[in-house]
Amino acid sequence: MMMNLKKPQQSGTITLLDKGCEFQGKLSFEGVVRIDGIFRGEIFSHDHLIIGEGAQVDANIHVGTLEIGGRFKGNIIARDALIVHKTGRIEGQIETKDLEAHPGCVLDGSLKMSDLKEPSVKPSLSPVTKLVATPDQVG
Image (tube, rainbow, N blue to C red):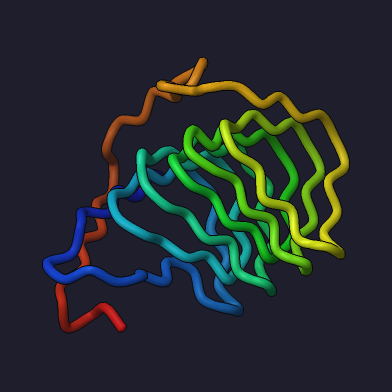
């Protein structure tokens, strides 16, 4: 199953998976999305993904900016920036233009820093399920 988020009418963060939620599949979105639950699969966006403090993500991620405060296992391509908060734990391969690692975070794997204009590998995502957030659903 794939979910495709459209940009909401107002700016803000959409929590896609709250604590206690679990999802497996492919996700593409526009805007800012936060995951606080469990996600397994593949994520693609040109925008901003936040993996919250209690989240557990096992995935291949290709995004513009990625913030990690929870546990992540897999491969990351963050074209613009990767921010790892003190509660963040990463196990896997990382490729990013800019890295901000806070004291206390754990990075276990390989790191390649380069000027990424486009990800070296793009997933092929075909829409199956679309999730559209309206302004009254955000916040």
